[in-house]
Length: 302
Length: 253
Ligand SMILES: Nc1ncnc2c1ncn2[C@@H]1O[C@H](COP(=O)(O)OP(=O)(O)OP(=O)(O)O)[C@@H](O)[C@H]1O
Ligand SMILES: [Mg+2]
Image (tube, rainbow over all chains, first blue to last red; front, side):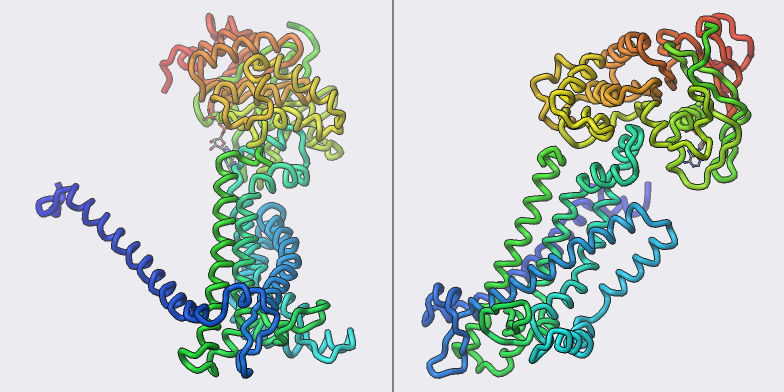
């Protein structure tokens, strides 16, 4: 018998360990609850003056005018549009990269590519934003003859660079998690490597890949620095991908410093934070639902 | 059995990196027969089986000397496509490994790869293969259910049906019943007996009774060498080598 058994029985020890983990879980839930509370506490007062519909669907965002306008529809559209375009750019790239690192590449190349992806993931967003401002913007401006290169396509490009590592590395994990038995079965049935990847490995990893995409989108929609620096900042519904937009996080970051504390503008910015929170929450719920459904049915539910 | 062999292994030495896993193996497999490969764990039975349909190609740092002749041609000749070899020589694994797809899609996987797209034709192959594997009656109403919902024994018969759908000449089975209960095992043994009419079967097993029951010839392996290879009855009644006798009577070690 080990000496500490004299002091604590095994049941007591297990109870202490269980309590400890419960405590840790409680702390993190508590912190989350506090953050949510302050978010809602800051945002809800807006709706005493402005109704929800005109807040969400209003076309004019003039918080400092007299009288102010608090319509965030253009900001929502700005966020959705850069998120959508960056996802469209990032998804095929990331999946190709993930298939390459997980299935195709020889070991030395695999490791090189993974290091590069990790480096990309570690780049501070302000550095990427800077890259967008000084490299991408002039190129866009010159090649398309635009008044400014700070616009939707620039922001989408930079955001896609940011989310590729997220989607690629999560997809890589998902592809690797496909049991070796399935691959062997496929090869033994006379499938080529390409057929095995297309018909067995990718379908087997689909729920993981989908989750990766949603998490990538959640990252893109919440990303602040990049859109603040390169999206241009115009609070209007864009008409082309070369127009400037003002996604929600950019508004919050740009205006929070000037909004008088506890004023209407201040509450409105918190309310934007609430909208962002609900959008990311929805993304996470969808991701969770999808991976759960797949787990039950396998890819046969496809 | 003095028929022409369907596949023959000639002076094969096989290495995993520097590990010499098979040592100068030569043996012939007769068509429409069942051959059992037996021997203690790690003696190279699976290695040999996986050489026969070039599944070992998927492993890094391997080296093969010697030839494996199938239909008069060395399947390791540089011009031979391993994919084509695997289409002719099917494989059933130790652990049932159906795809997480529907029963129907599992069976139609190989025919679709070979370009069968007509749905009537596919339906026919699926039914025929499942009938051959004696699974049809159990699954005919649930073809669109996930194969993962079947029992282990049903899954293994599904895997056999899936290999049959490819219309191979030879079926390799690596301990196909080791994960199954006695009833499922008996079903698969009956099935093997039935399939023998149309296919050549090579089966690895740790179950001596199984080898004795299902096979026509038996090869005993030990430490990468083929110790004895003869008609099953002879191996089990009067083995020529002492090691073989010790192994089949359980006095090994
Ligand atoms: N991928 C591999 N890389 C390196 N060595 C391997 C590999 N696969 C098998 N071996 C080695 O080759 C030898 C033969 O292995 P094999 O799997 O053929 O044995 P077996 O007779 O099938 O054993 P069992 O009855 O346990 O399945 C073993 O010593 C094993 O460690
Ligand atoms: Mg084995």
